Amino acid sequence: MRAVVQRVAEASVEVEGRMTGEIGAGLLVLLGVGREDSPQDADYLVEKIVHLRIFNDEDGKMNRSLADTGGAMLVVSQFTLYGDARRGRRPSYTDAAEPEKANALYEYFVERVRSQGLAVETGVFQAMMRVSLVNEGPVTILLDSRKGF
Image (cartoon, rainbow, N blue to C red):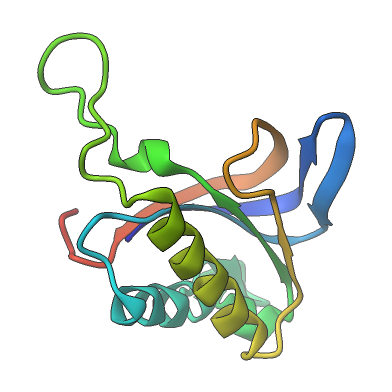
């Protein structure tokens, strides 16, 4: 499972002109599910992301987590995180999970974050979405449950 985690002042996602998710300060998480992923991969990323110390403390050091700040999370599914563009010019998505499995693990991830007591908004799985954000910092972290990077 892969995630692009962005610390934001605000973020939103729109589908067909309708706002489906919107947060203030917190994290925008673009989440991709791979063929070999399991609930354990989601558990790993939930724990890592919720406790990732990328928010400033009172001294201006990145020393606080989303759990510490009580911020919100906007989670948007993004199978293109598994795009492999090493050969040719069109990415291959063969490493991305099939939609049914991907959706189940995406929903599992969202529920696990909510179980931590955090506010979570989402996009719409498999929809064409317009994501807007104000990246705070900017701070962007790449995570892979298989520790590929």
